[in-house]
Amino acid sequence: MKAFRILASACVTLAILSTAARASAEPCDPPRILFVIDSSSSMLDTVTEGGLTAQKWEVVQMAVKAVTDKYPEEARYGLMTFPGAGGKCATGSVLVDIEANTGAQVQSTLAALDMTGSRQTPAGQTLMAASQYAGITEAGKKNYVIFMTDGWQYCSIASSSAPVCTQSGDCTLMGVSPCPTCNSCNAGSTDPACSGKTEDGCYCVRTWPVIGVTALANANVTTYVVGFGTNADSKTLNAAAEAGGTALSGCDPTSSSPSCYYQATAPSELNAALADIIQKVVTENCNGECGLQGTRTCNASGWSPCVAPTEVDCKGPCGASGKQKCVGGTLTQCDAVCEDAGAGGSAGAAGAAGAAGKGGSGGGTSGSGGSGGGAGGGSGGTTPDAAAGGMGLTGGSAPEAVPDSGDDGGCGCRTTSKGAAGSLVMLAIGLGLLAWRRRRG
Image (cartoon, rainbow, N blue to C red; front, side):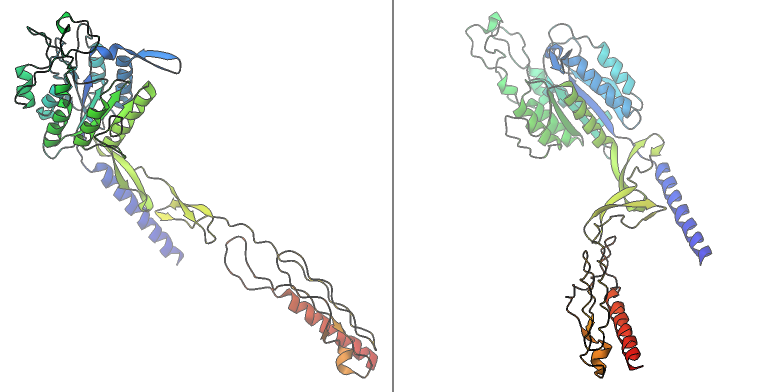
């Protein structure tokens, strides 16, 4: 039997190792992630946290570096920024193509970007251009965009009158007809061309980021949305996150407060948002040893081994919490420890048999504690010839305690009572019989 158990254990271990080897060797295709990042002039504004102040653009670079360093091979990264070359309202273009091992290139490209001059926010046009990029629109692939912005859809294009928000090429790209004609003037604008003009503030193109994200969704691309700072257009970003298929729990796409997308106002919040998004994208659930659920990632070598917990929570028979450990492919018994029910009290000693003419007094009182049994002593008969009385079989006056329940505090199981009181009663009978025989002798 022992040899059989050893053989069975070896077979189980071999099966587990074989499964792990197959899982790690199983081919896979890492997800494709295109960063579409706002590089408008407002990204040079600062944010403060913990007494430290930094430009938003620096914070974005650090957050992107953190995730691409942590998962260098688990995704294929690409990069677009907006505005594009030349600044102003140029539609963004792909600066780093989706390829393996491009994290470092994304980092260096962000660091080298020229942020001088007038840089506006053609977010919708750039998202629409991303929806036409073959690097993330291939069918059957895991395609993602991470869209980060700190403001509103906004362009200010000089015209013969007040500056306008669009030009014909933008409307053609966006598939919008007729082309909106609102101006970019805002309250307090210093542009002389806005003097005396209605302040439209580009509200007529406010929804263009949502149109761009919808086009991405139609092209098999999932879009995560991140707002950074305190001036993001929450209503538009809520709708964009819903259109992108990544709305957070409690999302209200019509709300003017952040509810559907990742909103960060401090560096630590931006780091946490990107870390959460990338982890969701690059990991998937798997079953580890003992059937415990874990996660794995895909890289150039195939699927990584499943990383699963080695123990799980459990409840003992009395409801106490414990753990079950995974050992050799099998879960151990729950190690929950129930509270001790208390040891039974010891029984009082039986009273001695009474001398001829008077029975002995009853036994001692019952023991304290967990339900010890009481001993019953006997009172003797009143004459030497009274056989029954001489044997002292009649119970004494001590009260009997509740019988021992037999509860074992360590496991909550039921066990057989030890019956200590019964043994003492038999002793009392024996002593009474001995005294009776001596008197007769």
